[in-house]
Length: 103
View 1 (cartoon, helix red, strand yellow):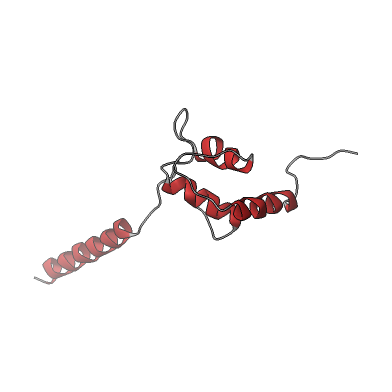
View 2: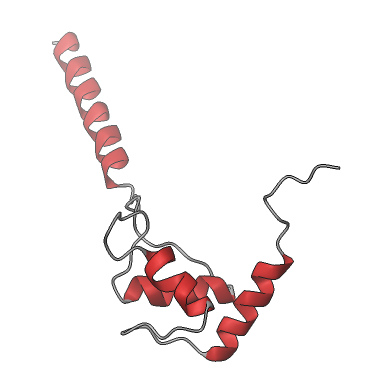
């Protein structure tokens, strides 16, 4: 009888742990994630218009929406304040270059 109770308790604990793990929200890998920075606001606007990250040949967020907006292009379905674009460009220009400089 004691072994049966122990087994039931173990099974219950295992079920609770698995339920907790499965219920943790996980964002999709290609879902656009952004923050409250000006560039993040542009990424959010692109994401709300259906653009996603890492979609070859599709509605790729960076190549088909974000970068063109920074270049002054208008993207159908994406509304971004021009001041936000200016602030994002300034933010991009203040980031350290990823290129390694020799010499």
